[in-house]
Image (cartoon, rainbow, N blue to C red):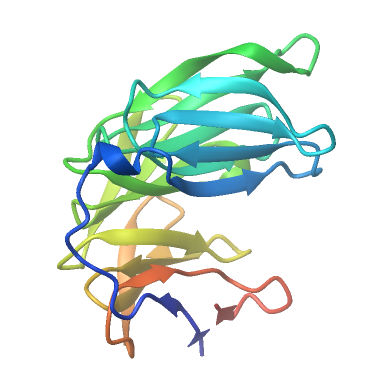
Length: 220
């Protein structure tokens, strides 16, 4: 059986809106697999890639004043996925394919545009061949990155989906939602999403979910 511990924001105001007075709020950050670089996304519409040793911003990705809610490095660290308030997820080339070094001129490889509200989180799986996204439109989507199309759409929640996580087997997906629920989905080998369980315990928005590395049957 799967066991769940999830982070909830009891008392979090639901009236979040794009207020330019909050444009310096940093939403999420991610560390590269080898720890050499850190990426951060902000409400100022920019993603910065940092060298933690020198504290220098070595590369900047411009989302054109749209809030950036999430950033994720690809498994090979050559690309970065971003989730933003323009209802799109983007895949950026951040390393020069020839030199393998972070480029100061990153560019968009793919724009994934089927969500109808803010994209709140992303994750790579299957070695970076596929991407999952979730959104304030209450859906989770499984993408074929090469084709730029959603292979399946999961609909179960009645409010925003704030975060997603997948276990090490890449067979179980968890979604954290503002409807106070966590849903568990079976990810089929034929690129299907099938909701297998809904977990009810929280009294307010569920903000974050993550599987433990020690035991993939436990979700934090």
